[in-house]
Image 1 (cartoon, rainbow, N blue to C red):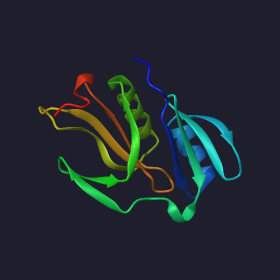
Image 2 (image 1 turned 120 degrees about the vertical axis):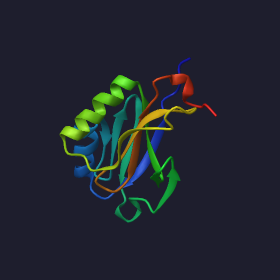
Image 3 (image 1 turned 90 degrees about the horizontal axis):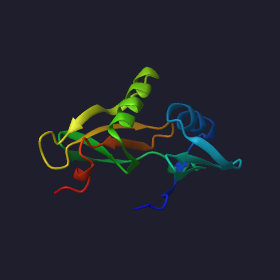
Image 4 (image 1 turned 90 degrees about the vertical axis):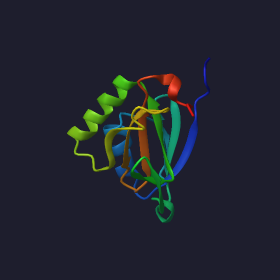
Length: 139
């Protein structure tokens, strides 16, 4: 089944910093842009950083499997090898993880590798992977 690409627009306070983070750190190709926004290709999904300094960052966390998970957040579910490669690339660049790369719900339904970090504007991102992709919506 082919899924349509997802679109997400989010606020940032510095477009140059967003270009470095999404382009260089995460490897997202840049699409269209203006002085106020930049399109990025996040594994085939369109994410758009909009200059809106008064709206960036987050204000809450929820307790999930022993960690304070930032809310709101966005990200991707990757293949395990891609997740491992991204974790290594981010470690090499000195990423300041909110939640270090780890396995959550070990031995339970929905077991997953996960990591959280923030972009330069404070927006939280999660990248996760499942050894068994059928566990994505497991109860």
